[in-house]
Image (cartoon, rainbow, N blue to C red; front, top):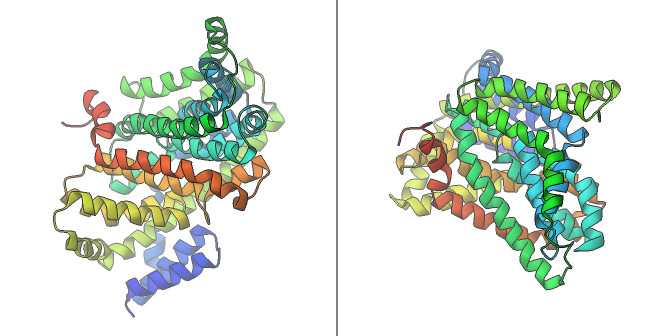
Amino acid sequence: MNALAILAVFFSSALLLSAPIAVVIGLSALVAIYAAGFDPLEICATSMLQGVDSFALLAIPFFILSGMIMGKGSMAKRLMDFASALVRFLPGGLAYVNTITCMLFGAISGSAVAAVSSIGSFMIPQMEKKCCDKETAVAITICSSTTGMLIPPSNIMIVYSVAVGGLSIGALFMAGIIPGIVLGICIMAASYFIIRKNRSPKEGSLDFSLIWSTFRRAFLSLMLVVVVLGGILCGIFTATESAVISVVYALLLEVFVYRDISSKELFKILAGAAATTGIVMLIVAASSAMSWILTMTNAPAKIAEALSIFGDSRIAILIVINIILLFVGMFMDMTPAVLIFTPILLPVVREIGVSDLHFGIIMISNLSIGLCTPPVGTCLFVGCGVGKTDISRLTPKMLPYFAAMLVAQILVTFIPDLSTALPEMLGMVSE
């Protein structure tokens, strides 16, 4: 049995045993490297060190910290009030409020899990009272939270940039804005048909004074997007430096302006962010070791050879790659999936004329669906906990939203301009 086969068998077996993903990846790489005839300890140590030795990765702990600060404060509630004022004249408006708030919160925190826990905690009970059953409310919250993976800032985009080898993080941030909005619109479209069927009532009439007052309360929260993205676009600071700016801004806002976070709570937030950062960095390091053995066993060339049966059919190859990523997303978290499969699939898509930028958005939007599916789906389980329901009751309500997410995925995959037009217009990539 060759090293690649041993890697696949060991990895699959360890994953089925529900071992921590970093342990699964690291041990699988160790065994495969030994089977290939190399010194496993030396190669793993070197690869893991090189994997985390990247300036771009410094942004991740800061974005994690800023997301946790926002999740504990009142920023999500202020955004929800503003979104509610915008759509309160529509039947079942709270469903749209949920999605819009998740999009806005994703734009300032970059965390899908934070969106589910922060927004779901007060939106799910309200939606259950006024516009739909509890399981539908949970389904909307879970699926809407994934827009934060595409709408910047996004930690997974930083990981993809590192996996590619230096793709502009600023360009990736810009590339994700339109696809993130498309995903949100598709989810709201699914909500429209469900709400129309349920004949949900309106929250009230269009009130411009209410829109203005809620906008004023949410203004400082929304300004974080302007500060982070505006600073990157104007060249004031890099994407990595913008992560530090987001922490400072969120701290000033939540501790000194809104005064929602005490010094005791701040210590817990810092400890939580440190623990999460440690997990992410261990996954990055272990994935680097696995990427090394995959490269040495010529896995990318073998995948390309397998896909050569489709000839030069761009459509067929992209469909197969999307199916592979959908399957991978069901069993693997986004960070290791991006680090492991980017070096494997990127050479294939380059051959059919797909840019690194476009493929990054395809991969991230595809793997975001995995956040909502068992057995790994982080947002799915957090949503079940927040909404006090279980997967068996929730699954039927999730199906229309899965369909909406797949429609968005098809649009993102086969309309490259959705991803590339904005960064090209801003001169961040060559035409």
